[in-house]
Amino acid sequence: MKLSILTAALLAGAGSAAAQNKKRCLYNHHFADGTLIIDQPGSYRLCDDIVFCPHNNLDVESASDEEIAEAFDPIVQGNPKYNNNEYALGFFAAIAVQADDVSLSLNGYSIAQCREHALMQRFFAVIELASAPFTDGVGPHDFVSSTFTPAKNFKLTGPGTVGLSSHHGIHGNENENVQISGVTFKDFEVGAVSLNNVKGLQIKNCDIPNNRQDVPILGSFSAALQIRPYLKELKATNPGYSMTLGGAVKSVEDVYATLVNHIANVYKDVMEYGFIDQASHPDEHSLYDNADRVIDGPCYVFLVHGKGPAVGGFGEVQAEDAAALSNNVELLNNNAQNIKCFTNEVLATIVDGAVQNDARGAVMQFYNALDEVYIGLDETAGVYTYTGNANLDAQIMIGKAVNQGLLGDNVLQTNVNSVSLPLIDWAEGNNSLFAPSFRCNGDSMHHVIKGSIMFRVEDCQGFKIKGNTIDDVEVKSKGPVELCVDFHTGASFLDGSDRMLADLRGISVAAVSAFDDALSTGNDASSISHNTITNFKSQSANLIAGIDIQGFSEGVDIENNYVNLDSIVADVTGDKWVGLRIRESASAIFVKKNNSFLQGEIQESRRKLPEYHPRPAGDSEWPNNGCPYGH
Image (cartoon, rainbow, N blue to C red; front, side, top):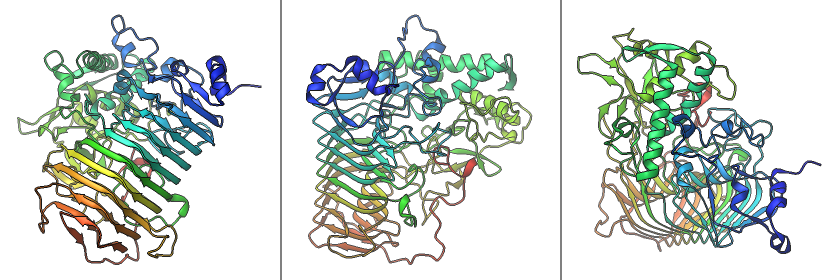
């Protein structure tokens, strides 16, 4: 009988102590090849500080640029236990739990990405609670080779630390009965825990001392990493392929060499200095450097969402299908502090009403909203002339090749590519009348910008948020630029032009309800109680809210919370500070008198549920009925 991947690994080196304690020990050598796949029920424990770093014995001193660029790529490494579908975007987790009834004790140890892998693998969870990072039919690629297998009845216990991650500490879809207790989460970039459509979740007594605050690169570097395999495939299947870019004929070999050189230079600089050296590599610095050193996109501590990725706007109306709702969620007695956030609004180029994104879903960037300058074009002569850069040249060349049918829909799937012929003609110098126009309110993947939210619960039936402390949160985002032709249709149900990139919320719930359909004020009501929210800062915000109740939410008790967002800010009508805000769509929200909201309360006039109430994202802005990571 064929042994499972994990069983074989453990038999090879678990040791007698693990057998005696009936908990299978996990050591660093279990992660040497890449993701540890737990596909059998049972009890596991860390018996070592795990540093996940599957670099295939990379020797930076002797390695070529290409070898550095693809050092962590499981497809290149060719290990048959990692399916090309599930692992098309790389090693997406240190541990992938695809079995029911699994308990994992951190046992006083830690588990984290190494710095090298965190740089080169930009979508990652230390622990993924499924066989793939996306469900079937979701994302820029078919991530499910046969059956998507989520974990049920999963338990993670401390003491111990879930550390450095380029995205999440724990991530999952379609899970049931998840318990997390006594864990320290630190140095995550996007969120400590993010679960979509979870049925039964308890996170209690966890400590979050900080998120990651030394992030060296922007999302544009991830775009470079993800478009590289397409250029490599085009180079292999169509050697000598060329086109005019920026007034010069460039071959696929030229464009590929420039891109991998950029990637390798960033890698070497970050490993040596912790950042991109501007003096040595000015082009790379201008394209990829993250001056704020925190994640340039969504920023959470805990995120609980309904079915599918939380990439659209805030939920307005709860899904009618209970199977698409999270339920029975408890966030209890957790302590989060020293969280720094920064949202980079990436103006999405639109042609004929369509957002221009590449074959992996990254937005074509022709404007830097941080420095307020154009990228890859020259407008000084009164017309827009394409000049290009490493990313844009690669994206446009692949876009043209896809339009010509030169790249098959294999492991490098191309169904989300939307690079249009007018843009390609302009880049080749054949369309002098072309002028870029931009859609706002999106990030580098054109996910809807919603600001920064520490605890976010959405599309959920029945929750309890109790006894938590959220302290010392800062948003570094600047204000929006004014080059928008229109706005992301999912940004806000009430106001599509609302620019929320610097907004900050402590606890936000949207499209939520009581534990059952009876909207009582007794045990069935959802609740936000006994929480302390203090010391928030965001200079460019339109809204800084301690607790925000959004959408058609109903059946929530709010009691005995203390919110003091800034000790020198009083309750002033019309300013950006508010201790509690209840939006006009919400009903049956019971606010007890024992709360203390030092920056006041806002309860908007009630708005009735419309007869027709679509989900907030509105019309599709991408091919395949949704965004690249949510179609």
